[in-house]
Amino acid sequence: MPRYRIRPLEKRDAAPLKELGRLTIRADGLATPITPPPKHFEQHSFVAEHQDGQAIAFAAVLFNPSQKWELRFAVHPDHRQHGLATRLARKAITVARRNGVERIVAKTTTSLPNSAATLEKLGFSKTKFYEHLEYSLELKSDKKKKR
Image (cartoon, rainbow, N blue to C red; front, side, top):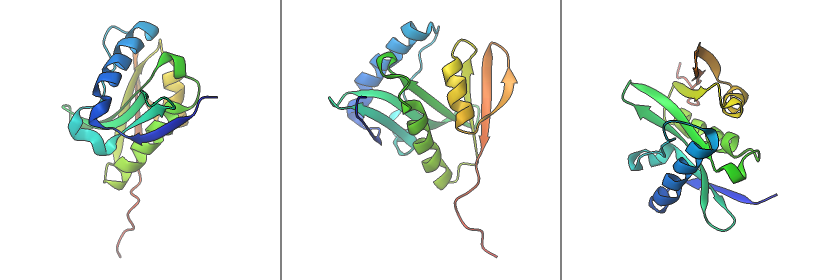
């Protein structure tokens, strides 16, 4: 099994993650790309790096324009089924929780059952069901409440 290193998103990851977006469109038959996270969300964004140093997967918890925290993730087709999406998403969710995020949504499609399975494994609950699936995850704060 290949070795992967999980690390925070860095500026040097922009080009490899853009290519990852193109590859996932072709592999998954998607109409729109899975876009990598923007630069200013680096604190909630992580990549998996292959042993050759190439970023081959990412997960991020991003604040989107509809005022929701959203989980996004993608894994290079040649590196799927190694638990990378789960590991990366857990890391991003943990950091988001520590930073006070209370609820995260995630979207996938019925044509991507492995993505739906990953979200369910992470504790997300299905909230909408059409051609697109929407999931949500309620987070409990890691901060101790003062009495």
